[in-house]
Image (cartoon, rainbow, N blue to C red; front, side, top):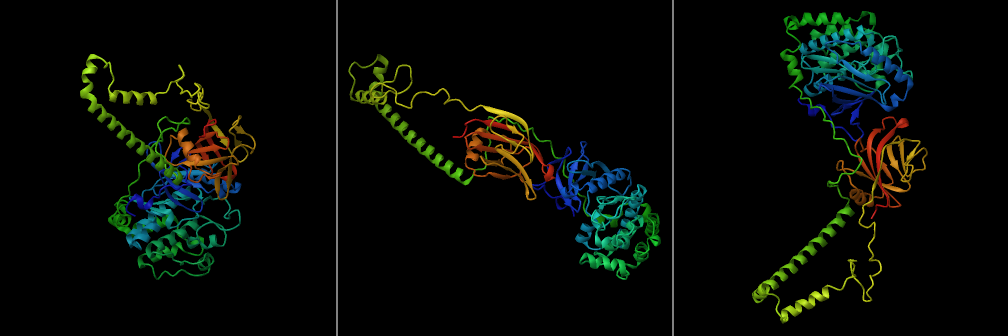
Length: 543
């Protein structure tokens, strides 16, 4: 884990670009409670944003528990914890932000380099025990301490993710009655849904230390019931551990919670074994070896340019559909052929003029010749045939009877472009719809554009119109929408790839065309999902 690109993942189509004002730079991972993203404070300090999964956020019991956890976690202050700096338990969806730790998790470090040497394990255990002191002082039991929740920073470990930790006076059961935690790192009382206390975290600390020293869980892998049975009914096999670590880990893994070491006792035991190195700071050579090269944190994501609801005058290149590309290739070929033909005629005319220039030069100086020559007669005849009499002042060519041909009369609207009608900030949810007719926003589902969210995702639907999601950035124009919506037959447009600022062209069967610009997309919770869009309509604009 030697650079940020190995730790960070690009945002996916279903990831939000912004959470509560925090602009997301990358995805850090996902867990049982939700997804975690990298962002920055306004001052540029990196933070980790955890967004709660929709199915959890919909449960009132979880929201109550999450709210109490946030209130308790605000009190945690420790050198070896990732401090929580912001949260909203009532948000849609709920979220919290902690300081970002630029380093791999213990699980990632062990997967990369194998078991840690004994001195590194001692540094690790001392730091995690000190973090547990701060957590327990805030009357919180972590309940899910494990290698993936211990990050390895340059100055020591950091304990993270109180996502399913609870204040000490909360029940030890979930809403369904099952125990909370990760099976390989549970304590016996946790596995049997008994009373969970601070000593439960000490058991998990012993298992975490054993994992760091062995490179695998002490109680083995396999189905959860089998692992939990071994934790509850069998003594751990400590013979595989390095001898210097056995006494400490055995004390942490005592079956009786009352016999387990306290965090303060763990810290003191590790300091004694480290000797003089314990006063040298949290970054000895062995720790730096485990850490690897320093991680580079990406810069904050810049604020985007405000998207205009009105189309820009200057069009931008758009990705072309296959039929559209073929049409443009034919158009280009015709234009090219016409240009070549025009160029040939021009060259012929120039040659003709040059050939006759010597004969006519004197006449151009003195005036027209009184008697036209053969060449003059030919040109005069050609000119006469090419310039039929026009109706006086009409600019239109007359027919044989002197009347203007039918269909050639000038139109008062032919040269005018359709005028846009702008309806900003239109709300779309599961109960209303948008219409091409006035009023644009309807309080029922009988409009032309409907918003629908199911388990498979959210989409726009219509019985009268077709949709096209513009993929080449902001600035779509009427001509763009004519071109792309005219080639579309999509009446059900998935919004998985759409984000705030995305543009959608819509063509109504009547010939009206609209441009939707998404200002707010909230689809994390399908039951209360919505869109906020700017809508621009051009009447009878299809060609």
